[in-house]
Image (cartoon, rainbow, N blue to C red):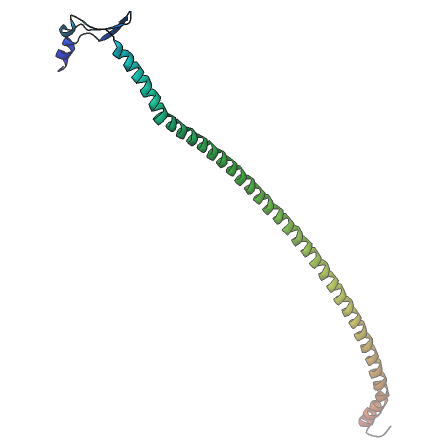
Amino acid sequence: MKYSGIVRNCNSVLKVVTTGGAFLFAGASTAFAAGIQVIPDSSVFIQVVNFIFLIWVLNIILYKPIRKIVAERKSKVEGLEGRIGSLNQDALEKDQAYGAGIKDARTKGLAEKDAMIQAAEEKEKKVVREITAKAQADLSEIREKIIADTEEVRIVLQKEVDTFAAEIGQKILGRAI
């Protein structure tokens, strides 16, 4: 391994030990064999105040506006999701109402169609009965007229039969009868 020399020089992990308010950094390599001791002075408190001030400023300038925007976005997304849900529900209800309306219209249309067919059949029967009755009446009149005409012709022919018989007899006998 090419990093084995580095590992041999740094064979322990840097440790932070806190004792009585003093920070002690210790290491096991030869560079840190004597140990370095850092004693905090007033600059540590200034750094702590500076850190807290920086957090406060970042909170006001950066974090609060971002959190506000995130909260607004979240409420807006929730509102849009709610609106989408309500619009989906409305669309579903309208689709069901549309389907029910079409079904009702078909039912009414079929009922009207059946009623019209029944009315047409009754009218057809009425017209056929009227035509049949008129035809029967006309047929009766025609029969009566034919019977009357037949009687007239028979009477006329009866009168002429004697004349025809006499003429035929004359022709057959060759003399007058």
